[in-house]
Length: 72
Length: 257
Image (cartoon, rainbow over all chains, first blue to last red; front, top):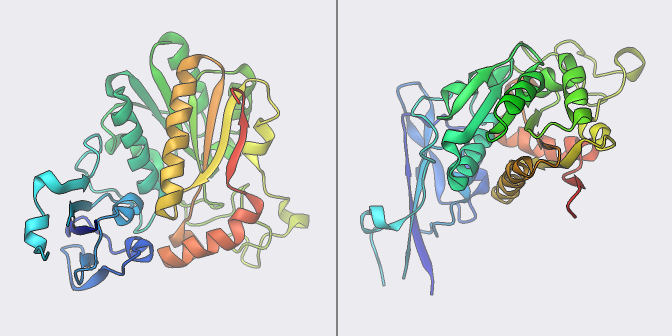
């Protein structure tokens, strides 16, 4: 059994602090090339390695990450 | 079996979402500030215990002065350092409520030292959440009582010198000697594991405060990346390498153990 996950980032509230990136075990988050209305490069999901472990959302200071997970 | 990202992102597959107790206001904290994470943990604990309408928070003076804008419970705003005094009055008038203070190190360890020491000594049944980042964040990164020896701040540009500035104040260890305290712990929120442990500690502190056995104190060793002049990730590393030596993580006192 394995898990596959995905994250949804509230891009307007993300401040691009990168703490989620440092805590991601599968390197599935990066900072976007684009910026939000405040000028921050927001976090976004990259690749398909996400396992939905919720580490990123747990450490996110602004609570902008929603985590989804399915069993496959 | 392959499954697309769009298929995963369905409401029934949500495993983690922003706690409902956090308001929609965008936090005014700097990017990567530990305050936001601790606010979330407090909100999650109150939500999980189902005590939203029975919890009163006392916000301090400092960066977290606006805590009342972010967690949807009843709040009082105390004068600088006086949150434990206000919490004492609130808890004595409403003994069936959960009362907690949320204070930084400039508020609790400096101007409010008398209030916290005496609240602990009286054994008030409140929770104190103490954010220790070793610096005055809001006013521009000046030296706090908890600043480490040799640490550079805007008022100690060559590093804190004990001959001139004294030694760091370790509040949690000090109050552990007072009989009025029930549970004292030191946690951090720099990794997901640490944040989950901190959440359990906060929950335990709220549960102890309802038992009427004394004051519960949760210190969170935190970062102030703006004050420390580092990126949030570097600040977390610096905290692990330097702050943990003086402020080791773990339970300091638990009267029920």
